[in-house]
Length: 605
Ligand code: GCB
Image (cartoon, rainbow, N blue to C red; front, side, top):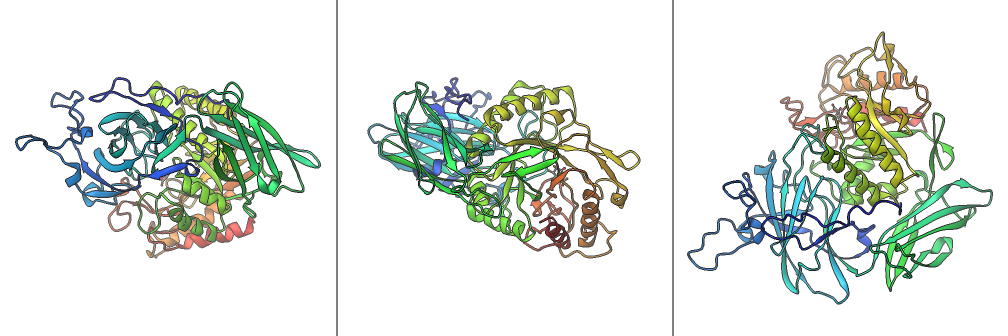
């Protein structure tokens, strides 16, 4: 991990509008929740700005007098046409769509402000951390620009030491979730475009030199009596001779290292096989890990496991494994808003567990860190992906840079999570040379950042000739696991599943990364009648029998755990702006297909 490019420590947004950038974007610190932090969650004042007049003047030039100044009238005659303090509040973290009726379908700019008290401390720096903001965030502290970030599902962080002062401070974020062709995701996608500061905001206090990132990873090669854990660490600056202590008390590991000239440490730790309990769904063992420097200790919980392929088999800790999966969006049970906590994740995970799952495909973007950690504690294996979805602008260099940044940030954040076994690069992308180049580069980047996990992407087979479905995708050479989505019985070939044959001409494990169909919970009828639970139930029966015939099938994750909001789904009385392919409804009702899948998974244990 540590040889990864330090692409983040760049001066941001030099051509600042109104306020000059006085700050530096820094890498979001590994395991941020173990740091000294002050939460900036809670109630933030907000208002929508449909025409972005708080940012552009009436000639559409960036204005120096934007809303980021948080101006107040000084004299009775002053004209100021906004007032954060008199504006309503909403909760952060949270999406705006489900917190304001007016903003339910809104896509555009919303300004948000929060005050906070700060006490500077000698020798310490203040970092402003956002877990995620969808989609574009322009961040100001005390009226000065801190930086701009695009991409709605990954963390970012600014060193704001020079922008804060003792006493009362304020942070303002201009958030814009308008969809654009060149974004990642692009203009069209089948989920709700939840806008807002959707994950935690923290003010992080760090010393001048601090541990920015570290990695602990069990090596694949096991000797008869012992195996090796690779440890690496990186400071935020290239400083030699800093003392760092790593301890894993339960494994009786305690070692002190001095950093090299690059500010890094790298080491191999032998561990006796007899001592080591491997992480697995059956026994999701996590070890307490402590990393100490200058009297400050970072505490983490880390599991050790290996993941590999052998021919068409997937091996977890050297043992063949079938992934009993399901896809899930990051949308809460019952309230159907963006998830942002372990408790939000827990309800969804409990449904997956009841269905017999040991694997979740986190669709279609990196989910929040609390969710990933909760899934890991509960023993779920995870597939994590970036929103390179459908018709991305393959030829656009900025689009590529954006996708690569999201991939890098996803891997950086979660590379210590034993639960994550697959990084996925894309979903259902149309074949072309430009796409192959784009995804090929992403694959190389992912491998460069993490050589220990498997790479995949959801490919597609959209039709069959003579009932033979043959997967063909040039990306096959880049992936470790061949995954594809198919909707036999829903978008195509209703009633034909029993006749279908599948040919996957690649000697790699196969995951069917999506299949399914819609049903409205409580709507009953004949199995030939769309939208009934019986139709979906029959579709699952026929699909599962069909999938059982695929050679090398190593796992399945049907679409989808829960009905989720989507603006592409307007059918009144049935969809009502929900994609109804859930095995569980948006109100937690289990549909008949839930039990079909559960029984099939029972047989796969
Ligand atoms: C797909 C997409 C998924 C959609 C699903 C559907 O192939 O990957 O994002 O929601 O189909 O329901 O159409």
